[in-house]
Length: 165
Image (cartoon, rainbow, N blue to C red):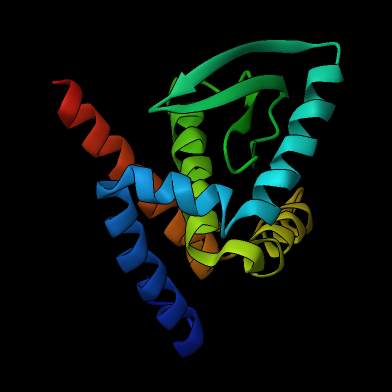
């Protein structure tokens, strides 16, 4: 990630170090999510209740221990901290990428706890909507909180695949 500011690079590096620890110690990540990250988990619970009321859910699943709900078409994903949401109709490779990315945000919640909505979730939502319909010059993962979510999610998925093999 060479295009981060110094502060962005520092956050990225810190998040990756913590994320790698939490990937290896998933129980610690889960405990942090329901204690230190309780605000994010509560927001995720509200999101889940809203989604469960939607009429056109495509299905439920579990991705490497994280439950998810598929609904809507071609919009991406949304982190619920203990679970996540992903759009249908995006193709297998892209859907797997979104699942990895959203799981990465779960680990970020365990790291940043009550600060997650303010330094990751809200900026991520704003960034998504600001980029929608435009042709941005930089990749989606160019900013530290998106890049580290993707990297952590990919590493976690890789570890889970190794354990299954």
